[in-house]
Amino acid sequence: MSVWSFARATLLNRDSPACAWKQPGQAARLVLGAARNALTTAQERALPGGARECPICGWRGRRFRTFLSADEVLPDCVCPACRSFDRHRLIAIALRRELDASRPRPAVLLAFAQSGCLQDFLAREGAGRCFRADFGRGPFGVDFVTDLREAGVAGNSVDWLLCSHVLEHIAELHPCLTEMARMLRPGGMAWIQIPVEPGIATSRRIAVDPHHDHAHAWQFGTDVAELLRRPEWDVEERDWSAVLDPAQARRYGIAPDERYWRLVRL
Image (tube, rainbow, N blue to C red):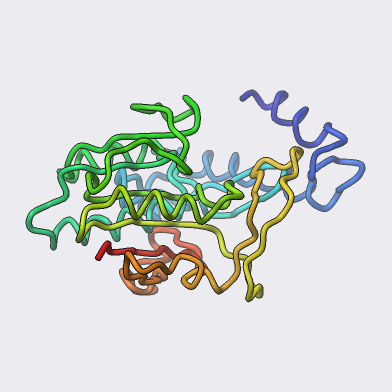
């Protein structure tokens, strides 16, 4: 998207959460984030190298780029080389450790709405065949289009299932979990990432706002592990400290509240 198209969709759109005359605070954060990205790029061209490193693609630099959208401005978030977010980098590190420890390695993986950076990462790490699925063709490319609420995938056929920042967009959460448990083989794992709202104890359904980029149907709180719990699997919640020390978290640009859930099919 060009600079003009982005500005027109955000700063100059009266329905945008970053509308310049209705939401000047968010508009200012967006402009400052864009300026910081441009300055960082110029600095890295003049003085290559830096303290940040991407564990997915190996990029090194002064800082990760600020993620810019009408809804959110997230500093030190996006890798300028592979476009990974901090959530991608965290789950990649966790997956790499699991792959190193797994014998045999997973043969069949199924990923919903997976970014290209993680797809490439799994191929390089020697994971099994990873099939990509989504509700539509989407920006990342898919092997097949399906609905997670009724996926049409054979039962007990998947070793690993990856579902990163998908469930918050689906109002019918529990049918999705039923399908995921059905598809996994005994001993198989589901790797789930969803955003948790700080300070909220109880998750709740919310109305989807068509003017917001994220279009969330759920606002998740600290009770996520209980929401995910089912008789078919064990649930383990892990934050960044499960796989990284503080220095590594800073180096890889992992936000303090990033976490994932590892579900093992019984």
